[in-house]
Length: 511
Ligand code: QV4
Ligand code: CA
Image (cartoon, rainbow, N blue to C red):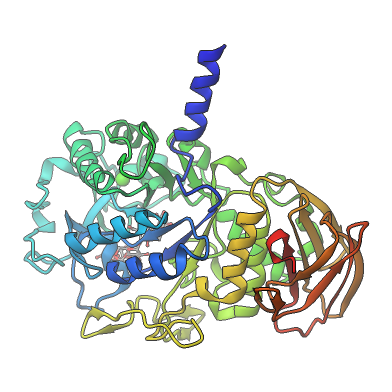
């Protein structure tokens, strides 16, 4: 019995489903295309003090330099080698970032591109971020090294060598995704090379991986790679800790490949989450917030303890990947803040916040023709993230994670961690509210008329500061004050034309 308890404790604490964030820190932020030096500073100056658990970084390994179009963000999804050498920095800068972030308790999660190498049509040469030679035509990547034997050309059965039909799981795993040279993950040599790369990162101190294009790899092949991984670096993690794994699988239903095939390896991205939440907040397809009462598994999502959730990601905020027009992004900032607020208040899943760069979005025939544009740069060199006097970012960086409403909801989630979903209320339309035990309460008005209602909050009596309309600092509140009476009830008024039509209070916003 004792042994069983010990084993289950080990399984619970250290398995690949656990993000290894510092206790009390419950969210990741994706600092898309940031320089490592800026991430190190952000960990120290902003993420640690504001309770962020970790950072998902862009792929750190050497990639193709694409000049036509000019340095698109997606060149980083075309690996050339596993040298830590990209526009975001070199290996020294990478190590410095991991060390400094870990030292302030902020974890680093690497976007691991291991399904493929470069596009098949890219010309041979040294046009890569570390000047390594590669020849896609002859399948030669000497800096790894990989050669023709290490790709799936023989295994793929389509005429073009490309994935032609997503209803055929063999094509999806063994053929090329948009021409990207598909690695033969059934080979122990390839598995070993990938594991060597990931172990190098683990030894440096990273806490886990987003596994890119997981749908395009057989779960068993992935498991064989994961079984080769070292435990996390004991300078920062308990002995025996396994890397946190979240796999990018887009499963919106209707295809033979299911997210559940990947649960054995780790968590999986729940793409239904952002698609549905966007549809609800936009009030499309007859959806309304009142229906969010059973949000989560009740909506056909995967089990909460397997889900990695987000409102938007680097693909679907610009029309790549899945989700289409319903996805909420910083471009629709008012609805976006509500969406991220709802996600962070709700107990379902492990949450990831998106942090973007601006680009000149331009629609032609419903498609953003500038969806390829890379991060703010000077002649290709990524621009530093500057910080304005009001704590927002400059130089073209959006920094949604620094928006007061989002930053304060990251803190809300930390405060209510482990508390039950309680005291749901709705008006049958788009005015809803819920609590998290006796620790936090949130109210939304997405209707076209004002909200004014007295609700059971579950909170102890007192005056609370709404962290959406302002910050609590010291004993003062720059936002709306909410008075909770001794029976835990409080009156809420939210104009439908408020800048942010939602109110959130929690144990630490009590005055
Ligand atoms: C094009 C054509 C091909 C053609 C080829 C000929 O599309 O049909 O064969 O030219 O040369 C870029 C271009 C793409 C180009 C390809 C190869 O956009 O037009 O092919 O390069 O040169 C990102 C981008 C892709 C980009 C890729 C590699 O989104 O546009 O392709 O990087 O640079 C599916 C998957 C899912 C995937 C999602 C986008 O199931 O796994 O699509 N999401 C992840 C990442 C995503 C990344 C990849 C996977 C690939 O989140 O950012 O794709 O690593 O749903
Ligand atoms: Ca594959």
